[in-house]
Image (cartoon, rainbow, N blue to C red):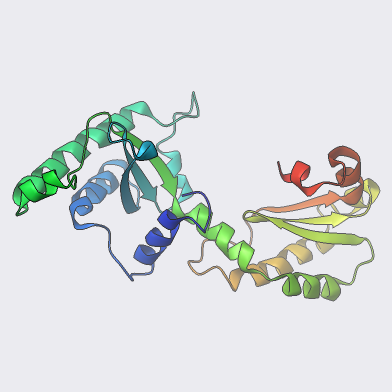
Length: 233
């Protein structure tokens, strides 16, 4: 789950919207994860890396970015191996119990519908971060142009969005210094937030905390060869 176009994001969004539910067999595991680690699990997605049955994978789709942080190792900045192993073990236990209780289990085994838990790779994503990207992307170019026209400031070059953030570009570095921490900058931020919240379906953005940056065309031209790919790389 990396972008709003991903099928995993779309299926998780339907759960968040109460249009669909997490798979029945994954419900107990989601509750166990929530209770043990004090998080909110929206979805659990099982598949195989490269469709190779020898490499099963479980995606734990948490709701909030702060929840995903609870599963990161602060020393290595990788996933916490202990927690990965704990969830893998619980997954094996719960899915095994479920398969034993369901009817026609032999049919499931023949068609490969059982869950392979040996060598299970557990990883974590969060819904909030992708939902923010989706909301930001929904703001139209027309709305951006109208906002720039409404601001009507000759020192403002352009407004550029990327992922869940926005950058207001002035022309020069000198202008950049002038507007830093200014009341004008606060006003621009509030004006952009008014656009943003119209598309923020789940209320994840806060007016005092979202990715709002100030930069200059001078910096863009000099240090990034006036190339958006280099700038956002």
